[in-house]
Length: 491
Ligand SMILES: Cc1cc2nc3c(=O)[nH]c(=O)nc-3n(C[C@H](O)[C@H](O)[C@H](O)COP(=O)(O)OP(=O)(O)OC[C@H]3O[C@@H](n4cnc5c(N)ncnc54)[C@H](O)[C@@H]3O)c2cc1C
Image 1: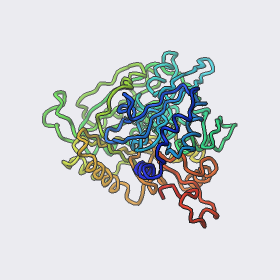
Image 2: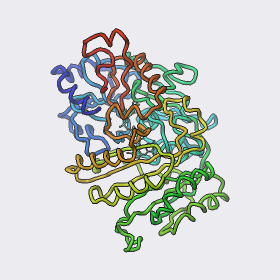
Image 3: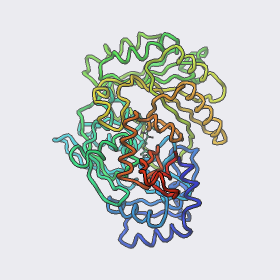
Image 4: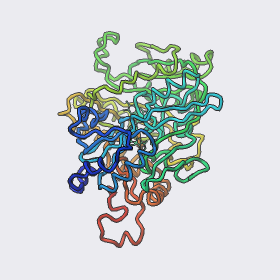
């Protein structure tokens, strides 16, 4: 989709649009405007996925919702394609595009925490690690993912599956309201009582519906967790046992097993180097005296090579946030929901990981259920709540010359596992086309999203994302106008 946006933007943007955009903003605009000749343009144009090397026309960093609304309106007036970026960690690199206006929310980082009422409002540019550090200081947290560096906005708008998913549900299950600027430039509040349709849509397909400027979350009490990594050889018995053992565990136990080839690490016996191992990353967020008992069936699955599980503060699960770090790793990514790790799936994973083509490739398993599965499937735009497990295929690389090879290798790996079109998860998708985006939603959900897209964004202004085409009206269907609603969608 990004490539499509870039192609359209290069041909369709009227010359001088960026300059006229800047002039049009006026002196009252307090945010930053970064043009190609500005010193920090090089860093500002880039996103976390280092393979995504694009040159936007300009990067604009507004300071509040009013300025966001101004940018959205002016970008449309000047014919500038709009890209919205929060934490810049989209696996597909949706936070930048050639010739586009990048609306970068990273200067909007305020928070208001109501510790007594156990709620928090967060500005859209804050990162999950920053948010968690602030609320955990008060003994409270909101569930995000396994990384502190992703934007609170991006992870929430796609759903949010993390360390507390079985105990407290997805991130969207703790979302109480959003403030959002829609394509018509209006600032709205969406919640269970105000604009409930829009609130339903943002919880799983949010990037398609506007620029979220603030998010209100529920907070849950949590201090320390029993967490760490248990490494063991990835034998058939271990792999077959992962889903049943983790599905039967108490909701307070979440694990993210990573299947990979053992690195040449001195703490791993030499004979295992290059052999398939499973790194069982675990977090127990329940009562102190029950944690070791809950972990016992996991440890009993195989013969642990190493075990770092220990009590630690919950924020220690996230690596430190460094906003200025230069992106160095490219990544190809695909995902699919699975019922189980059956022998056929295990055979494909073993064979693919031991191929020489992508030596750093890993497969992460998320066993779901618990609180996530107790929410009805049609309650939010994220709809795959009945799926027991999720596989995430991740191929990282430092040599950008390998980008195309790694992308096609990861895509082929996915195709082999997802034969027939398995359901997928937007937050883990790579640069995939509209046919795959359909699989991120159950059919009825997807149809409802297209109707809502037509209502809130008929011209598909917000299309630098895993894009949902606006439903096409009969009159537009008859029209040959290439700019008719729906015609800009990648379908
Ligand atoms: C290292 C790593 C670990 C991860 N772990 C997890 C995990 O455990 N669980 C999980 O669920 N996901 C995980 N993800 C996926 C991550 O949640 C998504 O990639 C998410 O979209 C990143 O959000 P961002 O704000 O950083 O990215 P961005 O690239 O800034 O944005 C992602 C998408 O959301 C849109 N968007 C962002 N902010 C807004 C806004 N305020 N309003 C409207 N649209 C917006 C963008 O236009 C873009 O399409 C991980 C990703 C990485 C790189």
